[in-house]
Image (cartoon, rainbow, N blue to C red):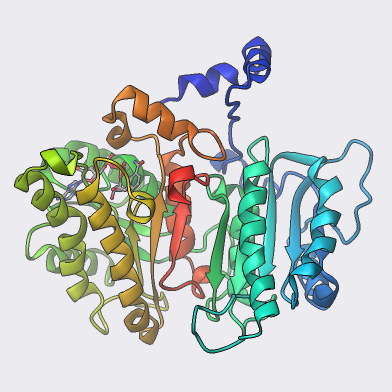
Length: 461
Ligand SMILES: NC(=O)c1ccc[n+]([C@@H]2O[C@H](COP(=O)([O-])OP(=O)(O)OC[C@H]3O[C@@H](n4cnc5c(N)ncnc54)[C@H](O)[C@@H]3O)[C@@H](O)[C@H]2O)c1
């Protein structure tokens, strides 16, 4: 679905009027362009800042960025008309919240000179969980947790399609680890256009791909609900990144499914995922066609919105059957040892949650329960998948422009659309890019996590 308001205010007199009236002024986001694969990673030079205790790590990060042909600076001098494409703030050595002031204030002048679609990325360490073991010094914990509030607030101040996100590096993970470089590259790139205000925990593991443009070369992936919307976009992005795609959808969507699969040179499988033998049939089809199956994307889902006061059994139970019971049942097969992965590719299970499963949403008790259930399922799968050398993660979209959200009545639809820091809905491709990243070797250190693709939706954190 197209966003007419965004098209209207993206320039000229309407943009000036919107500014004067204090109306939202969404801009077109910096997204990947298949016709320009050699476009630089960032829309301008990269500045690397740090607190004093993190200087060595910041030097290592700057060195690593040079390897990606970026114009990297360690101080604020910039030509008169140049604009920063990104600022990486290294805070891995923080031991007291007061130490955050220097790098934050060093960022101040840079923020006035940011390119459209620029990025701020922080690198920090995790605060210990309540009552947990590990770093229990209150000042260290305050400093590390402080990065969270700093980053989320900064993201709400970014303008012109720029975003702010962070990577939270596990204690034993160095800034030069493949998983950190993979996460950093994703957050700096146009692939993360609709990811905003988020801190992504990164552990050890993962590997840099031989070719950053085709990190999924030879990987075999199944995408459920691939006939349209996010599923179709995911099939396209996985194929662009080198994967063979098996697309699944209900027989009623057979024609569109065939069209998408023809486009990506994939394989169409008409199948209702609630069928008890759904996983066995998917596995058989993948093995017959490609010899193995590596990546499962649980994307198929439905909406059956009603206030709980007016809810019916078929709406509640029918939704749970598709959105959570089917993925749970299928994972009994997919997560079994030795099922996923082959020819060097690591097993990956990526499931579609929703910001409604995090923050809740009026009229969506059934959907919220199912999508929060996806998050629970993902966390429980992390250990068995890790044991098999793989990962299980969830992607939580906010408001994405698809047929599903087109069915929302106009007023709540417009409120949801403008309710993010980027003041617009995301596109299916934005979610697809996040899924493809989590499927890639460079994301091997991210496990059991929920990656929001919501433009920092106010109701979804
Ligand atoms: N669009 C959004 O804003 C949004 C937000 C949060 C989460 N999500 C989630 O993302 C996923 C995709 O959403 P979308 O907006 O692209 O939806 P969509 O309705 O456009 O597409 C869903 C696809 O799933 C298929 N499907 C439904 N039931 C099926 C079944 N039983 N077996 C096989 N296929 C089935 C449909 O035929 C359809 O092709 C869903 O899980 C949804 O809950 C979407």
